[in-house]
Image (cartoon, rainbow, N blue to C red; front, side, top):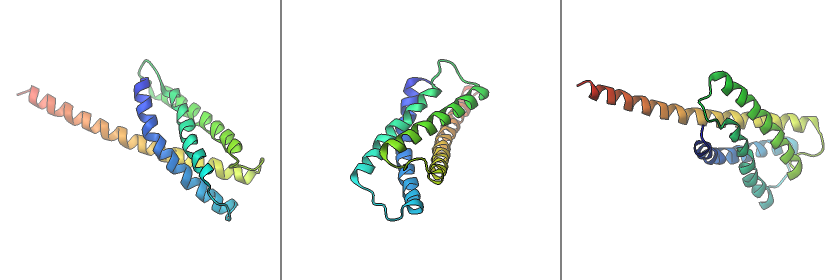
Length: 146
């Protein structure tokens, strides 16, 4: 993918990521600290986090087309970088208190859920784009043969 394509995907994913963070943080707080209150600062952290958490998308930049194996490796690397980044920011933003195992397990589960939702949205959009391109090719080939 080119940088331009990555930036387009990052922009789209930003909103999905921010929404996912809000949902996961709400569930996390309901489980761990039901009396917690979201402040304006927390929403700022979420918006800032959305930017920070899209940066690892650059792992997918390449000057050549990636094969399936390369995509799998980059996807695993992307997830590892993302988990480390999110956990670091969670400590920095005060979303995690110390090193409570339950909090970390719930946070990592939330990361996986949001990751899968973002991946599913990306896959759906890419799949729709592929269908449109294939339809246009069929139309082009059908017109070309007349």
